[in-house]
Length: 76
Figure 1 (cartoon, rainbow, N blue to C red):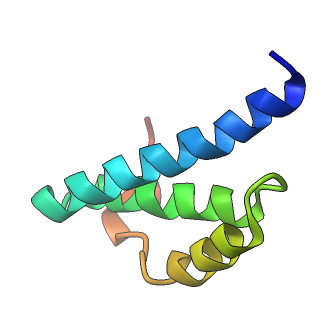
Figure 2 (figure 1 turned 180 degrees about the vertical axis):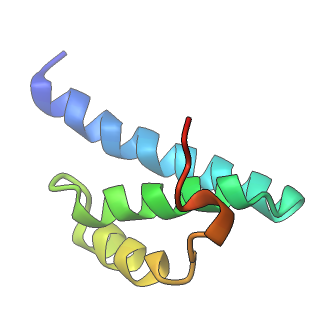
């Protein structure tokens, strides 16, 4: 496997994880899942190997996922 294949699969893995997190957040409303969704959107918005449409979409959706107040300062 070439290095570019690893990077491309990384973008795909992030997208798959994002879809999984969003689905579970829709079912539970868990604020920690919302934080994970927000972080994944942010990662994809700046990922150099993500398609520009994916980057732009993630950047615009990132603001729609506010970080809940009780998870802003985690001590884990």
